[in-house]
Amino acid sequence: MIQAQTLGELLSKPAVPIATSAHRDGAPRPEQTQAPRDRLDRPLRSLRVSLIDMCNLRCNYCMPGEEYAWLPRDDILDVEETGRLVEAFTGLGVEKVRLTGGEPLMRREVRQVVERLAGIPQIRDISLTTNGVLLARHAEGLAEAGLHRLTVSLDTLQADRFRRLTRRDDLHHVLKGIEAAHSAGLENLKINTVVMRGFNDDELADLIEFGTESGAEVRFIEYMDVGGATQWSLDRVVSKQQMLESLRQRFGPIQELSRNGTAPADRYALPDGTVFGVIASTTDPFCRTCDRSRLTADGVWFLCLYAADGLDLRSPLRGGASIDEIKDLIAEKWMQRSDRGAEERAELNSLRGPLYQIEDLRKDPHREMHTRGG
Image 1 (cartoon, one colour):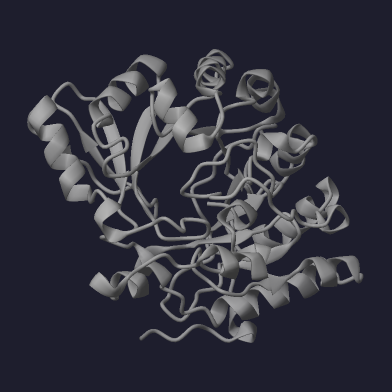
Image 2: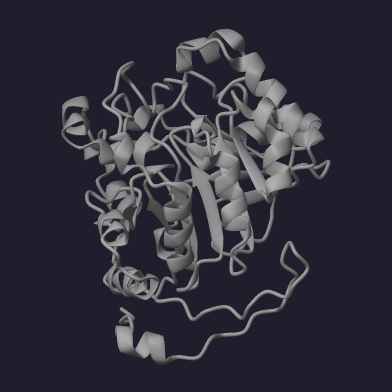
């Protein structure tokens, strides 16, 4: 096993230059900071930032109940606090930030957050994941604020299935939102679909064709046993290989494309050139290359989607800690990281069940997927 550096060694190393590209104001980007590496030699590069724990849907693989105890309003980071914590991360090498929730478009200041982050020169990629219900009213403003990429979660194209899954009748709003995003010029639009056996595994080809018509790349995600997935079972998982075989039967030969760095999706091309992705977190985990971590809306930092505990960064921030002091806390914690949660879950094989039951989730809201972000 490769041992992580000490904090002193990390901070004494010079920055590693990268190819210079223009920032949104036309100025060159700063040189890339030497990122701390964890005990498996994984760099700190990608950060998911939850803006709010609330959601306007109740997808049964994420939020099995109707009512929840939300995070205390006073604990939620404001726009400037979010920006300052992100600056601490970018000072350690983070260059990709994805805004999540809950549903991030329910956060009234979502545009201001994007604008604040767009002003941080070290960030080369700002993206956002949404369920799309409120997207039509926000798409143009997000593009103007500096958002680079957008991902819309869409698990079915059938209105009755959508109602059954989400307990809401909002499919038409989602479809209008995708159209609005395309019209607003948001490039690299993606659609994420959680594939569940017996529910939507017969819609893979339809979703790919819809993505083509909408100017979006579809990514199929294996059903994961995290957070609120209290109904999860291994027999409901459609594996990557099963998805590919289903698509081969419909479209013919499928070509595997080269992997895009540490991105979680394996990408493929159909005979007509249409590209799609599969995220096989359940049957083929990518823990060994995972460079991402998660910051909740109330400032708790989780180093793994499966992690039981996180590091409170809100308290030192509000207690007057400097950015450098917060950077030290982050770097020290990351260099202790050895998490490989998805791999450890996969090793359980037939003994594997839901990660949490409802009574366990109620003990700590930070265990919920809608709190820590997907």
